[in-house]
Length: 189
Image 1: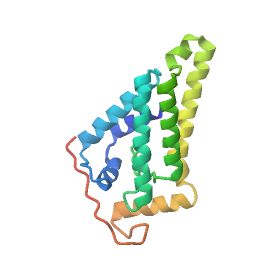
Image 2 (image 1 turned 180 degrees about the vertical axis):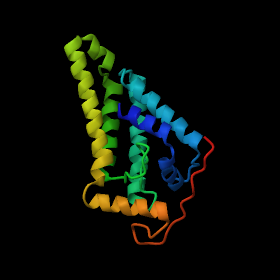
Image 3 (image 1 turned 30 degrees about the horizontal axis):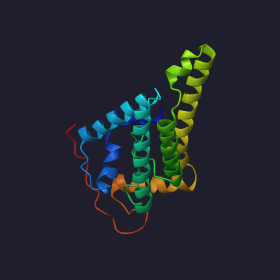
Image 4 (image 1 turned 90 degrees about the vertical axis):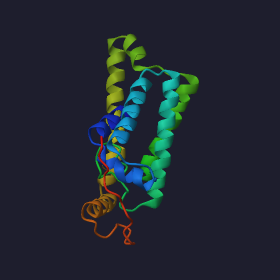
């Protein structure tokens, strides 16, 4: 479900993903970011059905996100925002990497061993179905808070604000080192 939320956010606002793509040496065009977001949304929605190939795709996406977030975490600097939820104030953190690895592992387990999907749980009856849907919604929101909002509390917030100031004003990067070149957003989407 978190993939659906993040994909929808990037469809609406692709710009925060630009620094991440540039840091990886990839083109950062709005249509390309939106295409990736559409894939993310579709894979996330298919994953809710607990279809084994969809679960494998979910595992692959989360593994890729763990790698990208890990690279950002190691590199740091002004492009240190994942852009995951259509905002540019979310710095990559170790918690984010761990979440992505755990999500990839859980999805891989569902791909190998199978799992019950939303429709399966709803078919079990109203109480089970409602409980399952509410549980998924709560877990999705909790995951969002841990990934996107927890880093903005305390010392991590200060670093995120420094990175945001650098991106907006072109001032001194958070690391205090020389300012790397961060290409501007290439529209066209």
